[in-house]
Image 1 (cartoon, one colour):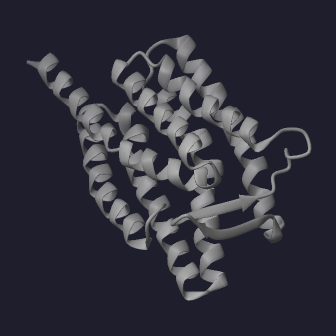
Image 2 (image 1 turned 90 degrees about the vertical axis):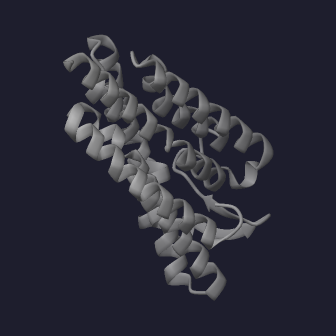
Image 3 (image 1 turned 60 degrees about the vertical axis):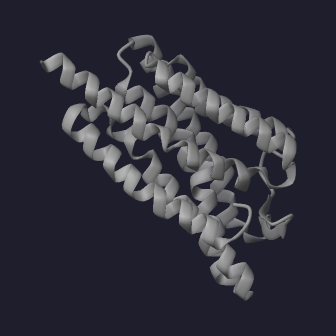
Length: 225
């Protein structure tokens, strides 16, 4: 994200134990929440990849920079598009919302593959630079011939956020609202480095999942009394 490698690595170091704690809570009280609980862990890995990208840029190591960037974009362009909807589908009790979430997960898997895999096939489609103290990922997408990348971002956001906004768990709706606001602010304030900035703020907001899992754990315990 913006600032430095230390900011990315610090975020990663904070999110990893938070995610492990969430997974432990989910495993003990409601295993259906485990996919959701792993989200902070995935964000920790993504931020570590961006920290690696920063190190590569600072040292002029092209291989390290590209490795870190492809790791970061693997989460940003592909993983979140299917994992986020699927995590909601796993815990959602309402059958229609569950089917919608699963369908969006499949759509996200396909859409994300079309966004991400060409970057491996065509390395020249990815450029990584520093812009205003943030990392700028400049990518060519196969959809560029038909749609603007702003349109791609809207589709991306809808695939991820719709399941959370539809979720029966009200806390997930609040989480989706916070993610949506961070996306709008990132796009408005730092359009050129949107991917890096939004993923950083989404990573920090994923700490809310710890509270969601903890609340679920408390409610389950009270029901057993």
